[in-house]
Image 1 (cartoon, rainbow, N blue to C red):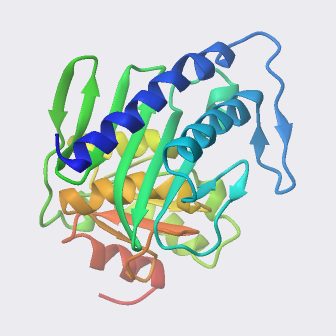
Image 2 (cartoon, one colour):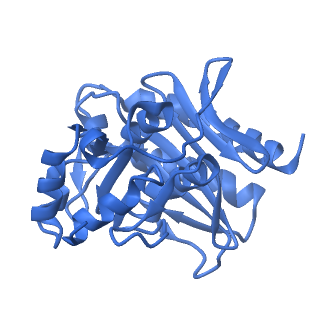
Amino acid sequence: MSDGNTLLAWVERQVDACRPIALRYFRAPGLVVRRKADGSPVTAADRAVEERLRRALARAHPGERIVGEEYGDSGGGASTYWTIDPIDGTRAFSRGLPTWGVMVGRVERGVPVLGVIDYPAIGARLVIAPGVPAGERQGRRFVRFPRVSGGPRLADAVLFHGGTRYWARTPYRARFYRLLTVCYLERAFGDCYGFLWAFRGCADAVLEYGVKPWDLVPLAAAARALGWTFTDCAGHPGFLGPELVMAKPGLLPALTRALRGDRA
């Protein structure tokens, strides 16, 4: 196996070990949901999964930086690092919805190169690594995601987003709402779940606000391999948040013009 294959296989084994941990809490009677300082929810599943992944990374890759949602940044400003979102979609997880995932990503010299997103409740897994095509595992079956090019006009576009509430207090509020009225179809498929359907070929763009690197690195690695643009609302490439426009390249200019309020 190539280095990318070897590293991906190791990450997948660690994520395999986290599946039963997460599922033990999923739909469990009496699951306690607490609020963090920023008001976002957290459960014992979030903490247990991140602790498990951090221990594994620290043993196998000592000294490497780890950036996780629950336990922060372990290594300062190094441009090669790991990201962990132990339960992406904690709100959905806590209400028994199957749209959450366990996310692990890797950035090398500032470039997202590896991602694993496991969706235990639906039996799917997104994978991408150097030398490994971006695709989806469903049991023993592997399906490559389609590459994208071009893009429809805005009036024919299918847009996914993480929910209108996240745009309500942003400078883009009115323009974002208008954008949703002029596209062909919009749906609020939040968290990593919406991106899975976009990569499967069911959407032309995904828009998010309030996202962090641990939400984005695995997705940015897959987008880069498949030809999707991955930018902020002005069209500048990036994967650090808090805003994100992932789009087919031909659609990006129309989206960024609409969000900025520019005339075509």
